[in-house]
Image (cartoon, rainbow, N blue to C red; front, side, top):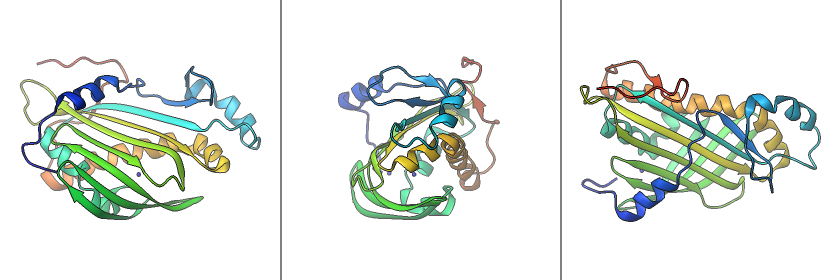
Length: 224
């Protein structure tokens, strides 16, 4: 912008999960060669100054969200791993075709379309039911780098029909123009994508047991 029963999280996946960095619900920019990260609200002026300065673009974009939702881990995993039906409910996804499928892995062609982008790319998807869905761009025609990561963990102890959903997307456009335009709209795109999967879970599984709660907004802690 997927499934095999009984698949468990092995040591390699646990190691991978421990290395994932969550950015406290902010859309972040990172300049190439600069290891420091900056909150979106602190660099809006810089974005305006750099919009037409395509010689020094800030290419890398990252977004991370964390929500407590009224659906089970299995229900959210089922929606996110259903890549071949993304075109039906994911914003701006015009086409989603699974090319190859094997236990814990699939390869899909995705087409995205929103001004000024109308492009296709191939995604390499790793799945660990019901804990993780990780998608990485393979062909590099549109992106230098694209990683989309969903993680699912238990929610409230007294409400089994809940889970915590961690969503992270990190990408770098090849086009300097696309990179500059992404400064203006991609935080909203990422949030709409995040919400679309939760709404689809409601369409498939019925009303949620609770309203989504943003766990990064106020650093809220889970209570039993």
